[in-house]
Length: 469
Image (cartoon, rainbow, N blue to C red):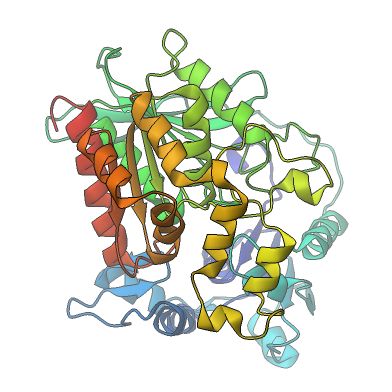
């Protein structure tokens, strides 16, 4: 930022990002303003907290023989874990900046005296991190954005600026960048793109200096819930680069209102997944990456992205679709707004009063405990046209190579919606593969499970669509 001509630089960090922000500010020595948002006092406390979450919620072991540390969604090697543990706000030289704001949770009090001693500056403020519990402690995608905290941070930074004009130089986009090299030495390149007409943001990954192979499809990775284009635990990044080495280019796409993409509905549905606009987003992306042959794509998604990949595949007729733990039962956003369910939805089982009463075990009492599979039987009876047998058959008949990877909860409705005989017939065509991985965690937070799914999906895609797999 200083290279642009700006001489007042501020840094904002949350949780362990705040710990890193303090380290950077202390090392830099010339930071103007620093905001430490719900900071971890040290990397050691951060890892200890994350280890506990992994053990309690995921059942994963905290320690390994090689010294690596697994936390939800990430496995740090031993060297990185040691570096994190050595990071501490207490070790930072003072002052961190001209002005410092520390936001902490009311349910996790921090001594103001201690903070003042540690973070001495010309102006120090300690306030509550409003909405932090609703943001950090909720399971995705049910987090509530801490808009009050964001607004307060912006206001505090504005109050501290010197408000004087200065000449700045605009930043130039770097253009395509080399991000990896394959076994043959050929590079993998990534570039930011804007998909018309809505201006959807995406990252295009492809093999450098290789002619565009029109016989190979382009993989389009869709958002997971309200997360952005890196995918679950950076899987979309890893897969797109690995597949590019085999000659398959990829687009990691942010759907409307998610990540860095604008919202087609003027902010009304920002950060909301499974919107009807997603159908239009996928059509636009397919037309942009493969204008001459819109079916020459592979749609890839997990959870809501897996659902959208399957729904869009019924209309687009792509060469392939990969759906991991697809979500097939939810209340569509348009229903929540009092509108009719979008007619393009052919898979989702919309929740209704009968099923919801059963799921919540309200009436009749304890029926759900005695008959745990009855909820899905009710859905299949009340929505026969949405049975998996119907849409799986359509995908196979239209020639779409279909891979579904499911844990127990996601496998159940798909398996119950198709007879064993029909499923065997569909799988014998070679166009359908339904993998049930018992105990598979929905978000792939567990490292060993991510590795297993990575091998399974990558082997399938490269064997079908790459000539040098």
